[in-house]
Image (cartoon, rainbow, N blue to C red):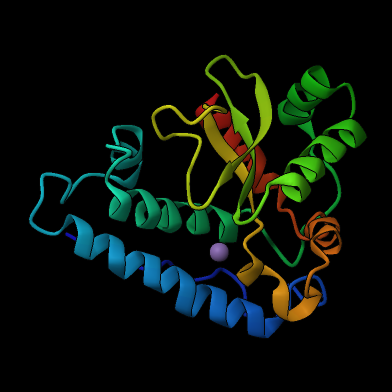
Length: 202
Ligand code: MN
């Protein structure tokens, strides 16, 4: 059994002007496809073959660079595509909004914390909103393709929202202006999807 590149639920140009078509084509069709095929090559014939990606990441031997980088890359991008929508933006509602307010005081304070995590992650990496068992949410960031589910990664919990801050995610449209890309991301966040992940992982 091998992992497959998931199809996007929207067209490559659907997130414009916030995320441009060419970036989406390369990011999904080349970068994510590359992580997927390299993950499959790394687990083929090993005892990881046939396990879910969540099982692989939660029980990862962090010295296994091929699975760490490509398993993280496979999972992280799959989540990233799912939490964006051309109908996104706005603010969360319901129990997710309550959890965000409890942890950060307000949506605006959460947005600032998440944006700062994305903007200050040095070099390549991800910003996350995670949920812990019991429902508490937490913002954090990880380098490279690391993921909060991996052993020993400081932030922990299950990621329910992720933002890719590798240069390949924004450089064509934003060049070095990562803060502009981070701000634009909030226009495409699919909060209904994030709320669904919150409810099923709290
Ligand atoms: Mn990426």
